[in-house]
Amino acid sequence: MNNATTLLNCYERIAGLTERMLVVARDGDWEALVDLEAQYRAQVDAIKQLDAELPLDEAQRARKHAIIRRILADDAAIRDLVVPRLAHLDAMIISTRRQRALHEVYGLNLGV
Image 1 (cartoon, rainbow, N blue to C red):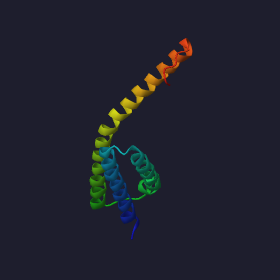
Image 2 (tube, one colour):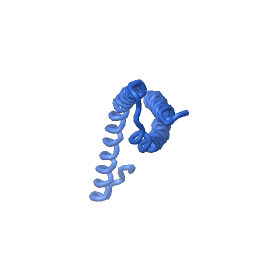
Image 3 (cartoon, rainbow, N blue to C red):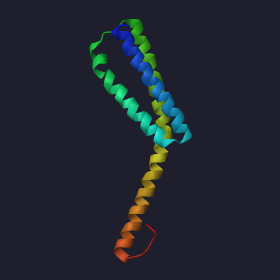
Image 4 (cartoon, rainbow, N blue to C red):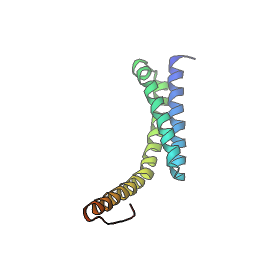
């Protein structure tokens, strides 16, 4: 297997990870999403140097771009699912901080 094939296979693995990330995000399995995201980052880090140094012919570049478009589409769909969840968590954190601040100021037992 040549370096170009190796590189394109790495991109396919990344695409597979983003597909799985989208499935678990749709299922609301946030822990699995975090685990897959760590694998995703490791794969991206692993191919950076090879990708920068390896010239591809036109067909290989077209395949790489098609894979990247799939990755980006999945990434956008994941973001659409994650952003509302993050906003909800942020609101919960702010609420908890306010409750703690009230407790500290007034000595109230707010169950926090």
